[in-house]
Length: 363
Image (cartoon, rainbow, N blue to C red; front, top):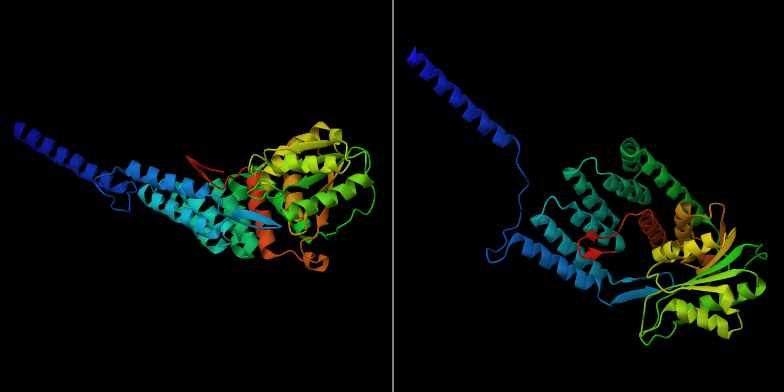
């Protein structure tokens, strides 16, 4: 009897050990793929990579034209590379993948970005943000089959996000096909506003020729519509000056009543132009607005303001654009791929999807 009991216990214990071994092999956590040095901890290496990325992000090196002011492409390539190195050490940190993908979007490398968004799904197959990006960028590229597949999955995962994204697409399509004009066809009605978007100042704090041309167009429209509120927006400081401050000052010197002008001194991008200025439109219950910027930029500005206003109102506001011509009017009628990419990219930002979201590396 004792012998049988002993044999039973030994057999049972062996089975438990065997089952434990099987269970241990069933679940395996992802491990770092890089062999970092023993002198540093893994956390130190990741933090150092992020610090390098932040330094590059804060670098003043920029590339500018009338419709686009951004970091140098080489800077964004370096940031993407650093984030991918960090991801190899922390393979659950898909925020690194998102940041690297968005850096590639910034540089126009949409195919590489799509590849990285898809890599997110190998970690989190039902990630809503990844499906939003994959839906949007496959649509931009004209990858109809993939667009439909990701859109259907997004609709299943987050129907409200899907509906919002489809609304964004309709806005983009409308704006992208809208004709460009350099004059206002008729006077603005009551409860109207003129919105003028800023442009990067020179290093000495003076206004660039492109910005002055936008202001000259603003003055023309303001004199035609003396009852309209004027919003000037731009807040990247140079030599203790901001676009908003100088734009307001220029208009006042040309005879415009200072009480008509609201100057936003904080916006650092077209996205922030829309997000920060929309509350002036809401406060004054504006019903119609005309947006003024360079011809290759007005479509993006219009799309972002319209999307931003869905949240803040005024809900019934009608927006049109008047261009300060940076290219021949005929050439501006067909939107370029680069300009369309900018509309897609920044529309997603206004929806609440940041370019970077990795600790110190923030939008």
